[in-house]
Image 1 (tube, one colour):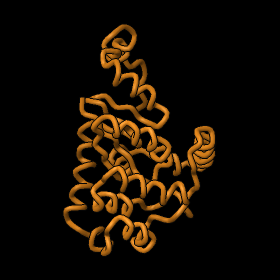
Image 2 (cartoon, rainbow, N blue to C red):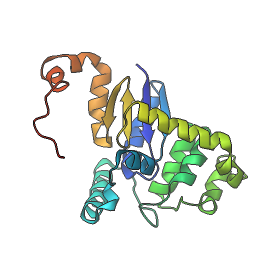
Image 3 (spheres, helix red, strand yellow):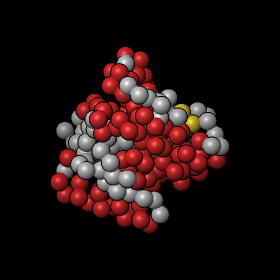
Image 4 (tube, one colour):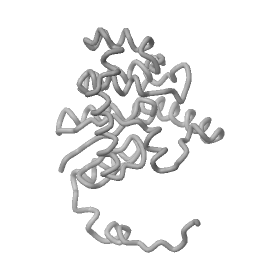
Length: 208
């Protein structure tokens, strides 16, 4: 089954899942698909956690607690949420390799650095072999690749990041990684018993 990981650098939970994704990608072929979370939320007419004040504070503290529990370094950038578009385009310009994705994540979430402008990302871009970052961020092929990732996310009905897509099944959130790995090892699990019944469970009430 094809495996793809949808993520956005603005998401601290994408950073928390990244070590497990990197480990998986060293064993299996995983397509890394950076996408713009803001566009996804707009498409679905949803508000992000950081757009709800009390949820924002809880989410940040929970992410930090998770990081400390799991031994993952986490330092928030100067402001959050921030515009992740420059980082997403840099990722694509650098080939969306494991090293490029990891370097960008570490820049933002391990070191707490800004990533919302070309100026802020220039030293990182140079380390990735990109000297003219403004040209790279403005390149038509880079923009097209990011748009293609978003369109593929829409085709697969992705509804949040991070999402690990295994075949047609979506596993949303860093805390669903163990669930995804169990499914990868036992793909028949959704076709049996209560798991199968949940796929056709009737809706008893819906909001107007």
